[in-house]
Length: 213
Picture 1 (cartoon, rainbow, N blue to C red):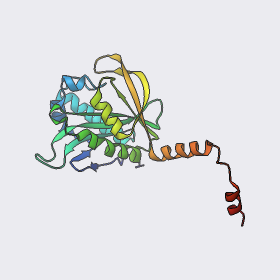
Picture 2: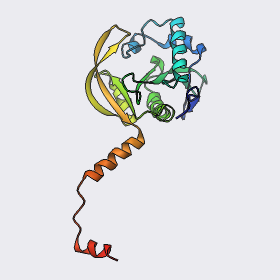
Picture 3: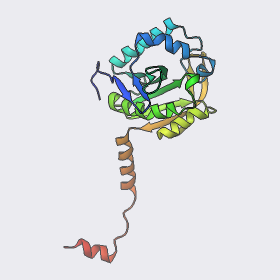
Picture 4: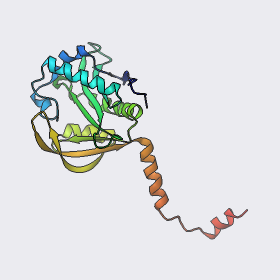
C-alpha cells in the first residue's frame, strides 16, 4: 500500500491509461455526462457544469492524497486522439468500514460497446487493492443494468443480494444489487479455511504403510 500523499499516478492497459484527475479534465468530463449515464449513477448529476466538475475533481484528488480513495480518469492510450478522456473509474473507502472500498465507473456514450470498461476494471481493481490496501471492493448496480453487471462478472465479483443506496444525483434511495470482490490473498485464505474445515480422507492401509518410515 502506498503511503498517504503518494497515490498511484498511472495504470496502463492495452488501449487505456488510467490516471489521477487534473483540473483540466473538468470540461471533458462535464461534456461526457448526460441523462443516460447519470441515470445509472448515484452521485453524478445529469447537468454537470465544468465548475462543478472541477470542484468534484479537487475533492477527489484530496481524498487520493489522504489515502481515502483512488479516483482515475480513463483516457485513450492507443489510437487517435491519444489522451482523449473517455470516462471515469474510482474507488472510495466506505465510511462504515475503511477496509472496504466502493467502486464507481462510467464511460461516455460514444465509447460504450467497445469493451473498454471490461479492460479498465481489472486494472483499476488491482490498483485499488495495492494502493488502498483494502480487503474488499464492492459495487452497487441497478438490477436492469445488464452492461454494468457484465463488467462486474468479468471482474470476478460475486453477487451479495439486493439492497438500497442513496442516490444524491436524484435525491432519493433506490434499489440496487450489491456485488463483492475480495482481495486475492483474502480469497486464498478463505479457500484454505474451507479446505481445512473439510474432514480429511480416510487413510488406507497403503497410505499408512507409506507414512511409516
